Image (cartoon, rainbow, N blue to C red; front, top):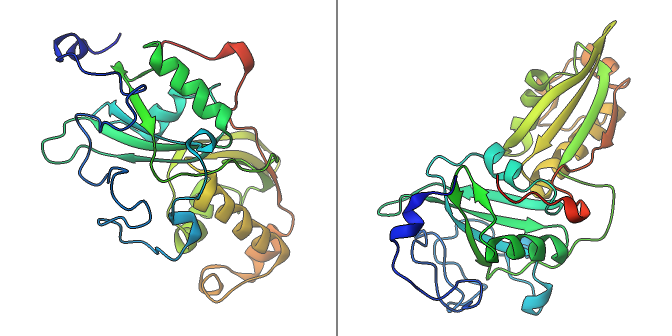
Length: 262
């Protein structure tokens, strides 16, 4: 059920139509587009990295949205479950409540513009909910263009010897290379010393893409200085029998089967 707090809010212009107005509960870490889009005052990352800077593209080609009025304890699993069938995800990140702001916000970047348009359509009709909260959205001022169509996704399927193919074991290596959040992971097969698992990261960018690269290195026995202390020769032998492939993102657009009330 939608949160009844909507009934008590003062009337204001629709954020979907009034792009230049900041949302009323905007988290402090979000810098509105009236500021220099290539200079985030609160940003502590690498501004020289092109992926952290706004692309020089028109608004209609932007695939990145800023969502707000999400549950105070919104989780990655909760957010992405609500986006199933809307559009393939390139990147997602949740900002928890801060200071006087009592709801969460999130940045969601779709693989293509269609995903963003699908979500905006649901929101404009009041049909998009996350954990009982009627979510709102506007275009993210840090613009991101569409990705090339490919099998790559935030989902990775792994099959191989049970002694090395487990989330607990793979986490030892993932944690060395990159920060990640999961929507979920689960075994799809476990028999006679062979295990298959499906890992659903919150993002393709900087998460699933990094995991794929690391898994490929382990499979080929290409061990860099950061991994060497963590892996044994026996594990490398077992990793050589591992198979990896991209899985289908459950958020991928499914035609007219887009969910409404979630």
